[in-house]
Amino acid sequence: MKISFYFVDEKYIQYLKEIEINKRGFTCIPNMKYQNHDKFVYGVVLSINDVNYYVPFSHYDRQQEDNVLIKVDYHKKTKIAGSLRFNYMFPVPKSCLTPVVFSEFPEDRKILLRKEYKACLSSLSKIQKRALKTYERVLNGNNDELIKNSCMFLELEEACKKYLK
Image (cartoon, rainbow, N blue to C red; front, side, top):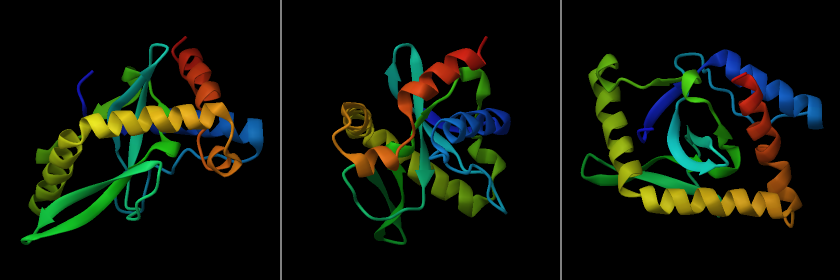
């Protein structure tokens, strides 16, 4: 699967949210719809047990242990465009993804998307290492705050596999 930006099927997002809500009373699956546009994901950042993980692109702009800041050149200055927050990554079957087509956006947005994508590609190794580190930190269960603020990776992997059946 190509590393790219993708939109995720809304029905699938709702399905995952219901899985988490039924299990723990809340969900860490991010909202993927905004008033003016849809949020997109970047992936594949991690593949575990034949399940591909995608990480939402966020406007969060503070460095933390479980994210990577995406910095772009903007009017001769480096600007934080957002981040990839790995505690919110989730598995998605290929059939629920639609590639983001940059040419379909207004010119200013298209330019920014290309810069963000280029920044993600240039940090791919770091992104994949951070994704695996976060995944392992959540599964080892030593950080209650991280677990509370992360998607339920194992349960979502199972849900992803069931969704395909």
